[in-house]
Amino acid sequence: MEYTAVILAGGKSSRFGKDKTLLKLNGELIVESIINKCKPLFSEIILVSNSSNKFGIEGVKEISDIFKDHGPLAGIHAGIKEAKNPICFVTACDMIYFYPPLVSYLLEHSEKKDVIVPRESNGQLQPLFAIYHKQVLQQIEDLLMDNKRSIVSLYDRVNVNYVEEDHWKDITHCTYDVFCNINYPEDYERIQHISIELETAVNLLVKNTKAITETRKVPILKAGGCIAAEDIVSPMNNPPFNRSPLDGYAFKHQDSKGASREHPVKLKVKQEIYAGTSIENETEMPCGHAARIMTGGVIPKGCDCVIRQEDTDEGDETVQVYCELKENQNICFCGEDIQQDQKLLQRGDTLNFIHLGVLSSVGIAQIEILRPAKAGIMCTGDELISNGSPLQPGKIYDSNLYMLSGRLSELGVKAIPYPPAHDAASCISARIADMSGEMDIIITTGGVSVGKKDYMHKVLSLLNAEIIFWGVNLKPGTPVLCGMYRNKPIICLSGNPFAAMTTFELLARPVLAKITGRDSLKYKYKKAKLMNDFNKPSDGRRFIRARLVNDEIFLNPGNNSSGSLFSMLGCNALIDIPKGSPPLKSGMLVDVVLL
Image (cartoon, rainbow, N blue to C red; front, side, top):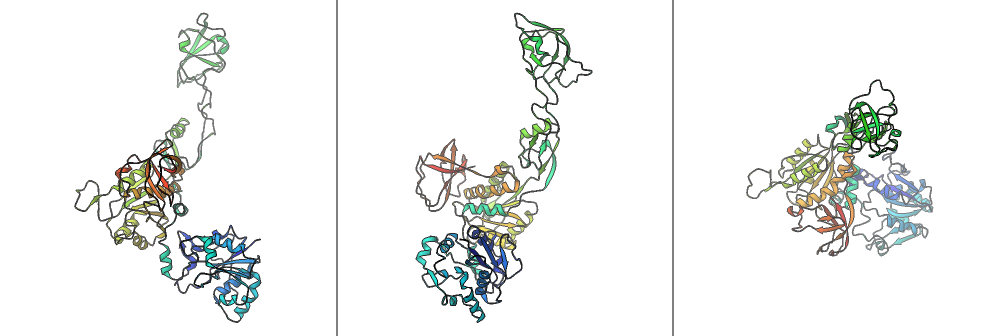
């Protein structure tokens, strides 16, 4: 059976103070998130927005209430009346924890009663997360005609299946309130602090990030490490002529028939040919004749083989040939390496030294590249001082700046480091505003937790930046804060070095891949055999530093705390330990992130 989803998005949001249908969570309109979750379950989606194409979402029909100013019951009425299918699921546009498995459960039991509605242990009903049959339309209309707006009053007139809490909780197994919605600004503020999964965080960041599209022409010598902005085909054959790969003599292969050191064949040397010289007034090489030829020289007309000079007496006027050659032996043919119009590289390729050699070999002197990406790096904290300054009491040197700048350079992204910023929201926000003009991405460390001087949340607020998420379910680096400012991603990492490095690798690298168009920047996973015990259980998802050798993974020795830097030496991988894992034992297969 096919079903219709009716999403109510036409309220006045009077308690919230502004239109809550336009609220975003994790960089996406909440209503659009609900629609995307509905699409696999419903053949028809109706959005009661009370506006003409307010959202303009593909595949979604927007309608208005027939009974104006009659609250959610009027929205239910409009949606059911418009629906093509006999059974409708109704929900509100701000159900932030919309849970599709529970919807599926309700649909499976939808034929038993006129209405199927969840009920909590305190008796609270959830009429905006419920199933309604089209046959209740007349009862709803009667209520509205009598100016009655209560949805619950409908339940006194129809057959209702109340799904008790113990039943629907067996479906959800959720630690959060699956029926939570947004009524007041503090409700919206509270949900901004809910951590999300790593994969969700990466998807949100990549979705909101724009790739570089600006291009520029550069000489080949300056193109190494850059991204090709165009497909390149060869304008010529290479080699551009048949040439000799060695020093020797060119002739007709038939003239060497039967030749040996005991019975050499003698040929008359007609000419000498050097690399870089052309053959003028060329006539075909006659039988019994040869041309002395050097490596790279043009094969004379009529010659079909080249003998190396070590297999001759190296004569000048005549030459004795000591072995028999086959047709086309020791000849590099025109176009043998590259043919005219052959594709040499495609847009998006990262240009390496071989690319530069290939392009140069066919005479290409310049190439169109994507503008190189720039990443602004700034570390925050009153305790930080720049490297080279005298170390004062209570201060530490800023290591994150150098670590992240170095890593960006290794990844082929130009790092623009900025001096440490003091713990003042106005100072940090002014610095970021200044940085943003030239940068494609801004990366900061410090100030993302919940301490008195963790200012990055206030900084993004002062900038009017859009917060995409705050907090990812992993250790180290849980409190990472990410947003968009002037259409550019801001990734605010923990100030602890290992936490900063871990979340940089896991979050920033996929974003850099999107910005630059280089898929090679994405991190990769593999399975490896663990060679040491890791004696801690992992209540949450955890990443630990390690050294990968072939298919074996070794824990890095030393301090594994998030603030430890020295123990990262030699670390070329991270072990991804799932949430709820017991201590790891040597010999286990583990998931490894390659650095």
